[in-house]
Length: 189
Image: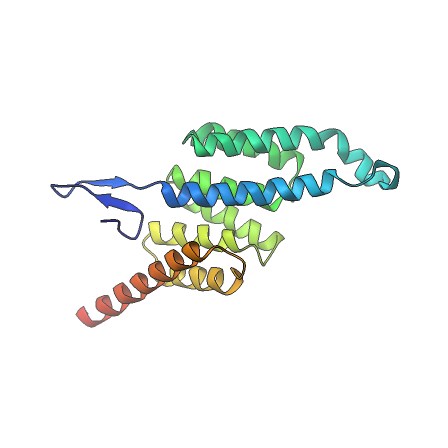
């Protein structure tokens, strides 16, 4: 059985973290971030503005570090991934996917406040960044704040028009469980 936070119950009541959903989300964010970087790299060099030309020497380094960080996240090497993402953000502070992935790395390290800050900064950079709302919902859930988790997950569902159906089902299921938990908690008081 898998609970809200992705923890699998083992015989005897012990819980083991199920990393499939965070891994899937990280893969999706990496693909989206890589696509964004490739799209920017694909601009013809003859039409680049001086500002874009000045940024190009770092572009290859940003792409390499970002790709390495994503691989580290998939390998559950969260601390080294956070270090690589920190460097990416130094070189490309407005790279939304780097903010999102840093949030997921910090969430995996149980650094919840910092994770929420990175998800919030991704949303500030790109208000329609659906996976940032999903991560924010998970961070609020881990902190035990179901009203905030519910609000973030509703935002995710509102924005996630092109997400895969299984992701939307998981999000709706989590939202339903949180709402049920809030309702049953309210009746007991």
